[in-house]
Length: 188
Image 1 (cartoon, rainbow, N blue to C red):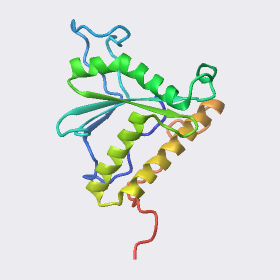
Image 2: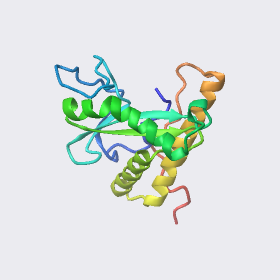
Image 3: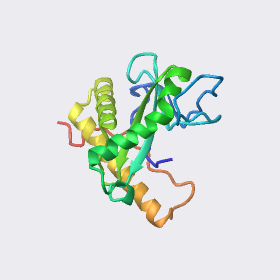
Image 4: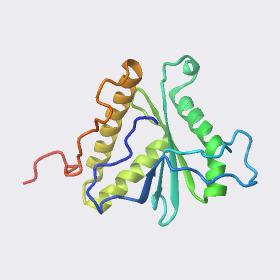
């Protein structure tokens, strides 16, 4: 797991999608022919699935990857090439399986430890912010700013945990923020 929290701080009834699941198991392969490199293992999982994200009643799957731009394996690539390479790796592993077996869509969400994101991830987050904005009546610019800020803090937390290890209680969870308004200034 990447450490990124998929539970957005929304009140009941304000969720932009239905049937959101974390680490949903994929349907096992039963003879379908997939591209070389596709993940065909039984019990394979992706990070998040939801119904109605891109189109009504269709299931969308996402898988999250966090890359480190200063890693030796990335030193000869531009940032754009790094994101594209990691998006393509995820697509090669899961896209055909999700389309052919799950009859759904797949979007790889690639983030960097420095706070950046790939093109498909940016499009995904823009669409998410738009859906939340329409559902809650919040202004789009404030919703997208909140989502980006939240993700950056989750990325920072993930980096810190990977560097020094987890030092809190095993059952400790982030405080519930469901009652917060995404407009971070006083209302008149």
